[in-house]
View 1: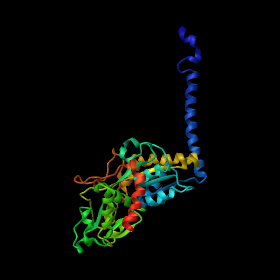
View 2: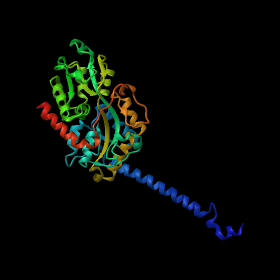
View 3: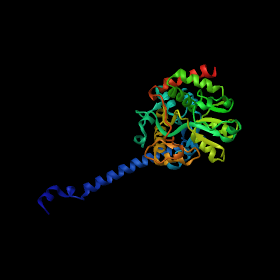
View 4: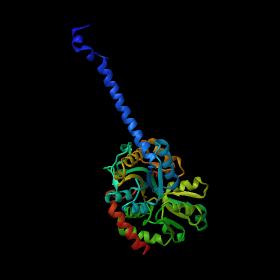
Length: 361
């Protein structure tokens, strides 16, 4: 044995008691951490803790998100369905019990951010979401996309001497009187996207309101949710519905073969469906905040993003590195028209009020 080894003594030798002790200590710390998280989860569930999610997408995907998250994590979810407008009103009231808001257009989330309703968090996969589809501070993150278009019943169109609409202007044809269903922007995020699209493509608020007032003459029914118009046209009650086109694809796959999707040549709007952790979750308990973060992580994971493409709703994923249903992508000869999201909060309230006053009267 060398003099150096003798100087170190048995404690300092490689593989000696000190090294083995440090290795065991590191393993013990890891075990304590894992057991600690397990205890938090078990205690939370033993007390009946559930993650309360407010969902503004369609029923089947809302439930699919909840079931898949529970299967992945063991965390139970209470899912409540409300339209984006209704949800925004609900979470703006003090004392609500929701932990997460999921679904509905990002414009509504911009409004929520301006009201201080969210807790900032950047979930795993956040960097794969385009900058236009996420809040830079992490107050909300896009989870899926949808394109605004027309869902038409070819039989009803034919009976009324109408072609499949390919333009916003087509919908102003007097033959469409009473044959259009559209979402109400006072209650529906889809409806607000319809309003904002007209302002953006026509270059100004008044021009947009003038066009919407002319459209109003042909609208049979405004619905409180963006999903509902596709059901109205599927029942043959109108010729054309203004909706996000994944809802039309869902109706077609359910057997309504006379329906057809088309997009306006002047340009159309886009929905970025988002998710956010709600203010108050961070004060309820550490368990609720941790569970809410895990929910966002799961929804932005590859498995979570794939859920939208497997359900009847056929949502496009928000992440750019994942495959998507090509039927829902905007044709190459069509374009997206939008207004700056940074002004979205104040603009949403203003434009919906103008719609109420100038269009609905």
